[in-house]
Length: 320
Image (cartoon, rainbow, N blue to C red):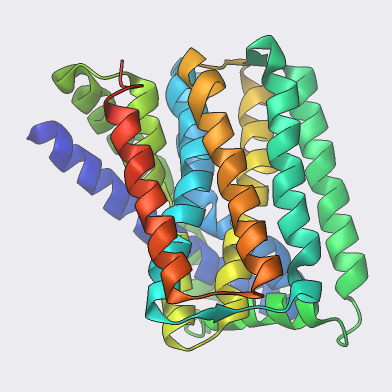
């Protein structure tokens, strides 16, 4: 029970820290004259992935590579199956294929790149450099193609920045928000990892399983909150764009930084099962988006069913 409480407390701290960091960073960007486009593309993208980043780095440097990699792979799976499934049930998510083509194909390409790089059963520092270089290329490509307001995806990233309308007004509260956000993220990651390892030991499952499920869902709560708010407001492009951007940052940025600090051996179960589930989720999303040009409630329900199957297999067939 104590381990579950620590897990929940860690999730709460990470969620609060991520929210404070995003809002403080957006306020700082406005004061510095950073465009809403760049803010939505970089700050919201990195900010919503901040819990995954801090937890994966903490796990990597503390010798828990199963949680470090499992957190990222599991987050990408839950982002598509769980979060998009929930949001599609709230409101059908109509999207413009031309606006999201770049990001959707990049998610699939990043997933394939991950499969290629972990072919040797580990992510080395050279692999990390490749991932970070790919992220830099993506960000440059995205910004250059969206500088014209006539590009639909530019409006998407501007809307992402504007989705969080409550930000600190004064310089003092901007600094306080950023500092508090960072402190909560660091403390939350420590508490979450302590609880996660304790839960794994108590129930006799691997740390990878906990990282792929409980930790992954917990660190994805910022994406969930922003996406649900956008779904309620009927901002469908923001929902799907937020998830696609988060998955790109997770694979290229978080794993890149984590493996650069500490080479990460990849658990056998991720090689056998989870990396394929992650790629399958990305391909299924593209199929839904570019055939029907939307995610309807039926498809949202199917995504949730697939996530239930994935979690069931994670704790049974692949639980050890």
